[in-house]
Length: 370
Image 1 (cartoon, rainbow, N blue to C red):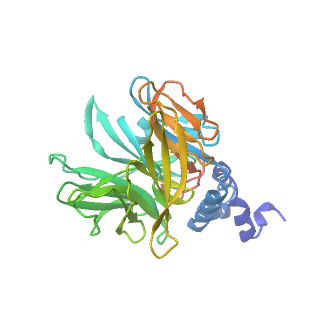
Image 2 (tube, rainbow, N blue to C red):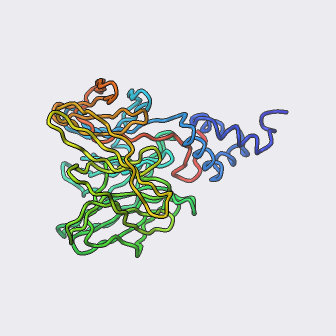
Image 3 (cartoon, rainbow, N blue to C red):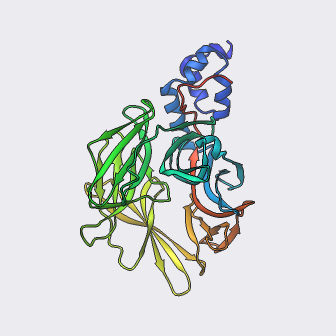
């Protein structure tokens, strides 16, 4: 029996465990293999296996070069060695002034950027691109209107997967001090549409520089401008397209650093200042009970007694730090208290590092054969 005559269920089982680059070649073996590999059910199976086994983990780094220009690079997640730089001009079709990683989901990266043309700003963070580094596919989202002539308006974005419709979505919250408007982009429809669900107009919503998408929901941190209160979380359900407020624990004397996804839980990061150094307390959101509770997950200490920005919480317990004054970044092990320099040539400072798993999710239909 030849490999092409294998039963479809056995062939699916074998192919679903292969790297993306192999699948990109194998989908051109025959029409039946092409139909199998580009089938949404197979893609979902491959993504599920890859996420659970983590065989091909990469990382996306947003940083600045020595000349002050934005730079996005891919790194091997385990070693944090440079894999390559991203051609931002090719992705956005314009010169990029600043770029932000909105999030990563199933191997798809969502980037927003300010663009320049002839030395002038085109507009702010309303230019978005979906990009699959593994398949080298990218998709510029349709432009979305923003009332630039009105002061006080600003946007927040979220990115994730709708498991009910097998679709990838980007949510945009446009708000000022008195109102909020929400639009959702659907990859399958390739269009934006307004929705009725909005966060309360008095919420001042802030994006996290850490990954904040988990199990179909995207999270931001916020505070209520209408009253004196502690920060809290606001989530958006990608399938049901509704917002929800999640109360936080009292911060006491700690400083709020941000939110992140740690060990498959939404986590709160608190900075605790000391006389000579500082530490980070990580609190995980427990949603297994009837009432949501917060559990202290770990304390990362001590951080060296000079100014560092926390960039990433690593799976092995180490943390990635960036020095905004001198430039460069380093990997710090709290247990060993050792710092390892991770400078990249022509890199001045680092703003985000987000790990992701490679996938064969197609952004422009089912893709063709090379």
